[in-house]
Length: 201
Image (cartoon, rainbow, N blue to C red; front, side, top):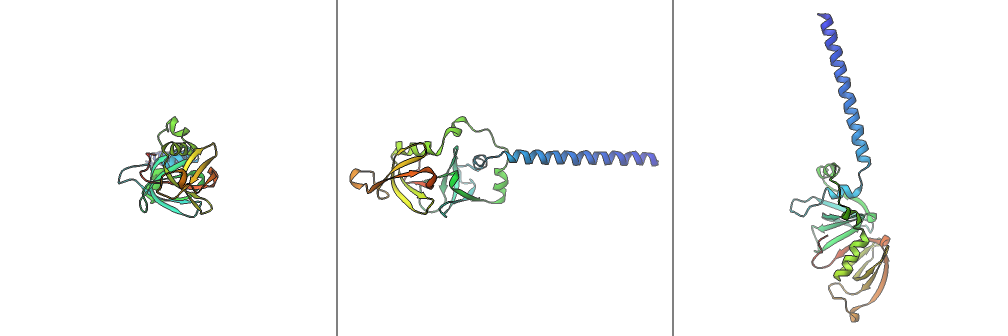
């Protein structure tokens, strides 16, 4: 009888060690997977256009915070729909994000394995979005990292900057309404609010 118990104990010990080793390997594999997760993947898991979409607080380099739902994610930017305040869409480059607040369950959900992104999403840079705003002739409010805000219409967008025709918010871009022009480097932008009906970002 004692030998039976001895072998049972050995079997249990071996099974326990295997279980512990498998759990350690699973934990290490998960750590390795998480070490490869990029910000765009986590934000992509929070994307939603319905009423149940996750509400996040995006803290930006100009000291403001946007309480919003994530509606789109590009190569280096996120599109937001604010849940309070003025309407329109907000676009923020990843470089201007200093923190993201959300409930714990959404934080965990954002870290789950993500579906592969389309090649188009990988090519849609912040400059791509700004060039779309040029085409639409949309009025914008550009919030700079310095805390200043500029209103107007983006006339053209280059590789790392754009030209902004300054005019009063809510007015169309007309030659007699232009108060000046600015070249704005992408690196100086904290976020851009698109006035009126938001484009589908």
